[in-house]
Amino acid sequence: MARRFDCTYRFRLSAADRIALGVAAAEAGCSAAEVVRRAAQSVPARDAETRAEIASLRRQLNGLGSNLNQLIHMAHSGQLDIDAIQTTIATIAAMRAEVSEALRR
Image (cartoon, rainbow, N blue to C red; front, side):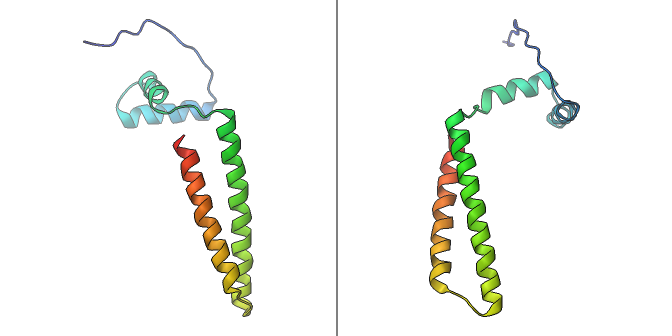
């Protein structure tokens, strides 16, 4: 039995979002409305706390990237600190696990 659509929802999009929606619909072989319905049913919205946690994790990862860049410069200049590298690798692995967990929510 076909689904009955008895509610209408109107919203605004930027021109770029409208084009992206049209492309997604064309690629999926369905209407733009169907793309929106599928997205609404399969992608949960993240709450403010989760978004803040992800932002914090991103900042920390950026800091790790900076540290890694400094280590690369040290390696090229012959001032390599193995302990610092091992600590950074362990921290990156822990952060990666936290980001993966946050994205699953």
